[in-house]
Amino acid sequence: MKLFVEPMDAVLVEVSGDGRVRFENEDWKSPSLQERRAIIYAATNSIEELQELIEALQGPKSERVQR
Image (cartoon, rainbow, N blue to C red; front, side):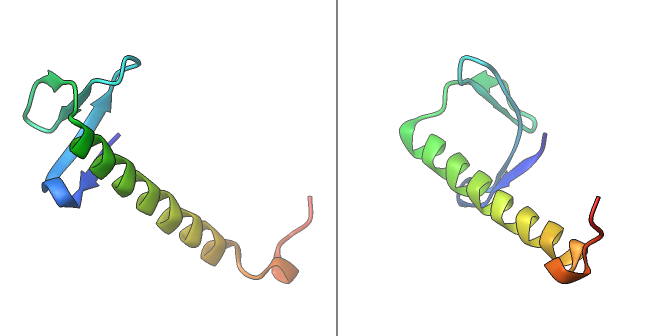
């Protein structure tokens, strides 16, 4: 996974099951509350952008192929 976290100017590359994170060129660490909020904000924005991409590529609902 790679997620650019703009407020931190950092790229998140891994998340462990216990909530620790690893940024590019850094060691594992437990993120502060502010860092967790920045990561969640970046992830939410990425999800929304990807959903818009999927919808644009699928075209209008009336043009989608029914399976």
